[in-house]
Length: 179
Length: 312
Image (tube, rainbow over all chains, first blue to last red; front, top):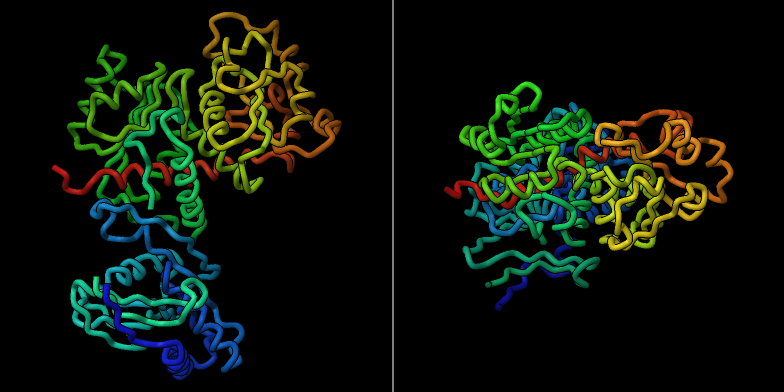
């Protein structure tokens, strides 16, 4: 197994800082905006961005939630391996709010398609945007593109992007891994 | 991730502990779903489920139907009272007729023990037993165990007493099997005439004295006296049963600790429990009903995930 480093800890931090700045630029005080992390791995990106927004921008009351899309997936009964559901915690209604989906890697776009359906259970958002740490270009199955992206990557089919976090993987890094 | 070890839910007997934990974990997520403003997910939208009730039911049938609809399945309902069963059709014929209408899963309640097992051997669809005679009622045991897990955070090591008509109760058998698999200690309490022979072989103890049983336990699951299944008189009269095996407020206040009261319903108020107990803070009876929908959604979802799409 061969892996190539795409982002090290410092680069990851700079990228997250930039993404947070871009969010502030568009959403100002976040009074009409909520950030939704897509389970399981988008929630790590969300937690980091939330911390930066609190510490560096003094935005302490940003509404954040975690959305699990398992029951909305379009490959239910079509994959060999069943998928474990994760928890959803959204303690507010997204009606007329600007929702920003947050995920680690955007690949086929199917998860985001499911998330677009899932979020409707919490009301009709005014708009939905997508923030992703890594955008795998030219691999989309659906017409879905990110509004905010950390880094674009060209990867072929037998490669995948591995995002590691200090909390779970003992380091902050992003790798391109050959299977 | 794991998946269920079975393709049908015929009884707790056929499940292992990992299956039970998987159902609970999945039910946790569905419980969140059914508390959303929009309580519906599209997972089962391309499946059709038949609810075949050859015996009366309100709660279980409604609960299954709600669970199915919240998973977006198409649902057909059948109850024996208004069907051709009364004209002499056999079970297999009735079910095969329904299956030729392309049904993927069957939820069945039947007065004969083993009806679900029999059916699962003869049809292609997944079968879920919603009660077969005095044998098993697996989803009730699952929701009871789930409610205990929710209330006490863990089931292993908890002391549960099942009180009442153990002999005619499918809830009792399924509950005993589930709780034992999850590591709880179980006692049964009731008139000896309503105790099945060899019940100890299930690993439970019989405690004929209600007050002693309640003082021992953390959770008491009160069962209804199933008059409709009684071919003879098992105790002198209801008044005497109430005096010995009915739970009331003054009995609970005499106990050394606070215990949780459960009941699978329907309640005969004033017989197995009094109204003030049923409606008290000790009781989690309505939580059980809510959890019933979440647990049944989990069972349907996990069994459905084993039916492959376009598998011929």
